[in-house]
Amino acid sequence: MLEVKNLSKTYEGGKKSLRDVSFTAKAGEVTAIIGPSGAGKTTLLRSINQLITDDSGQILFDGQNIRELSRRQLKQTRSKIGMIFQNYNLIEPLTTIENVLHGSLARKSTIAGVLSLYSKQEKQEALQLIDEVGLKEFAFNYCSDLSGGQKQRVGIARSLMQHPKMMLCDEPIASLDPRSTTMVMTILRRLADEKQLMILINLHQVDIAKTYADHLIGLNNGRIVFDGQAAEATDRQIEAIYSGVDSLVTE
Ligand SMILES: Nc1ncnc2c1ncn2[C@@H]1O[C@H](COP(=O)(O)OP(=O)(O)O)[C@@H](O)[C@H]1O
Ligand SMILES: [Mg+2]
Image 1 (spheres, helix red, strand yellow):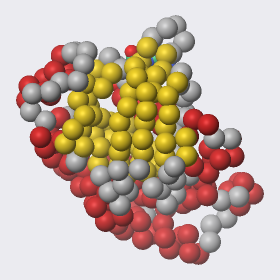
Image 2 (tube, protein in one colour; image 1 turned 120 degrees about the horizontal axis):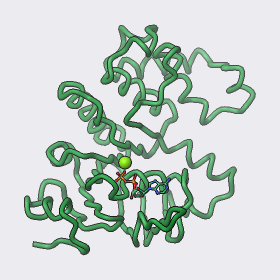
Image 3 (spheres, helix red, strand yellow; image 1 turned 90 degrees about the horizontal axis):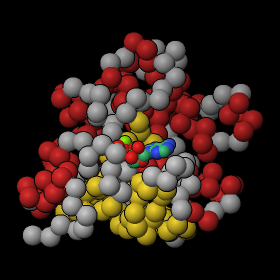
Image 4 (cartoon, protein in one colour; image 1 turned 180 degrees about the horizontal axis):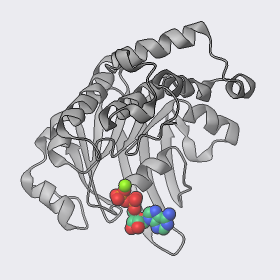
């Protein structure tokens, strides 16, 4: 379980990007975070694994307050948090399997990592994960030759190599066509259902959020303006998320 309590973030220059944000996300659930551009979606995901430092609040994950961990503890906790990006963040001149194997670096010693020493077992696991995201025939292709949807599936397999408990996905389908979108969202849904992963996903598309997510959070101007079941969000509530009301929208 992830519990975010009263989280606030002010960027240098005084822009308040998260204002007293509190919510809970559960294992086995897909939580979609929607809201207009600039609402604070990326800031929220990046503070969850402390890629940015926030002002105040609590982020409780697996019973620990992530904001209070030592560097060593934070590294260990981060290894349980996979990240998926809009632009995939792959090493394009490397092959699919090489990129996926990189995901295991988070839980290896520095020396083994630097020398890229992968065990036979890790290579087998990487191939298995590549198969699970439907890319078996592309395991030894260079990522630069793959389509956007295929690249994103490599990104998912790479993060699974970390054995994550939580996946933070920042606009993972924003650059994809509808067919690739369906494929990527179906995989993320399956990971929540079958591996009981906790999936947090920043999205622009409300219809996708309603189709694939259990839980919907609406952000506007750094504030939570909707928190409820995705299927039950009404058109009026969705409209309010995008139009900029400053408090929780209830019917
Ligand atoms: N590094 C930064 N420095 C200053 N302001 C930032 C920075 N990153 C984001 N912001 C501001 O914080 C707000 C939220 O941004 P962001 O989290 O990227 O929103 P979203 O992902 O919902 O589009 C925006 O007003 C943005 O301009
Ligand atoms: Mg963003």
